[in-house]
Image 1 (cartoon, helix red, strand yellow):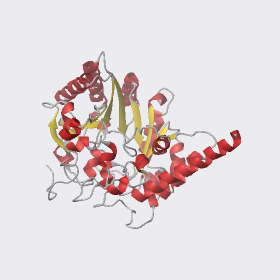
Image 2 (cartoon, helix red, strand yellow):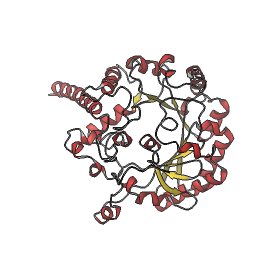
Image 3 (spheres, one colour):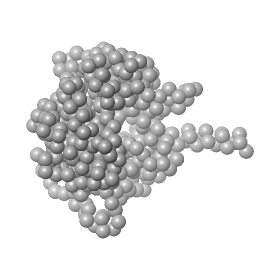
Image 4 (cartoon, one colour):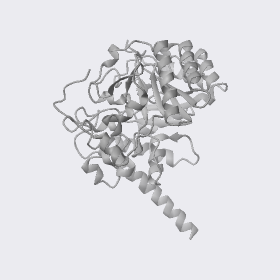
Length: 405
């Protein structure tokens, strides 16, 4: 159920048939996010699932049933074969996916694999808050090669500002215990990386260095979800760039290290784009977004961060029991995320950083009346970060050219 927003907004009236007649073709879904459990054992106050505009989680079953799992598996295999995909990725997600239990997660993995074999390879990952990570789960993940990403917001003080339990207690020590299990020699190959939501009150370099203590192969920093109607914390309506400055401090520390310490996804993607390559992230760039979410009851949705915009923003009115995933590709809301610069606002089209920024993360563009055809609410922050990285790279490349001449 959505809200009445007073008339059509971008991209409600996007003519997909016209796009097809003029040569556009949709990009098949390659990433399937399965909400195997709809509840969480933490009460993070910035969570887009539970604390923001869309409260649809309240209507969802707690756990994805075996019946729904079976239908999802069939639909994934069907979509891959219809579109001649030899590889797809499945993310076990929530809520907190580990609340589904180790044996249920095993059932999900085995059911998807059985439907996909032998011609479609499935890669699995799980995104967890880390509190429940133990040998029981890790043995299952090791058996099937499931990559494990853990959400952690820095050191104990920084992490526990927001990532707390329902009784107000901090979760940091439990997360550290879970990471301790994950980084044991027999499981370390499963460690996919850490995911951290930016908190401006936390020192950026101290946050980065505290995350480095876990020796993650990959790290990413997420801008808190917000939009023009509901701006993120500390994002004043002026020319300041608090989030850009925070990220630049980490970039300079990371880039200036004598040896590579880890990969930071946001920075790596910006660098790829500056060199003219495609982005593999929906946070920046203009690459088609080819992701779909399946809720615990089998409803098919768009990326769940859209729930931060308004109630029903991620909805499609589709269900795995009756609708193939190809049906998603004909929706204006999905096509809008696959047509590149055609989806950008006029101000974005006039910006020198448009090919790299790509308008920023789609949910951060929302404004009542114009919908998602706006610059990101983080526009100034992104521009400052991108131009800073560009200038640093240009300086170093000029230095290399001077030496080789």
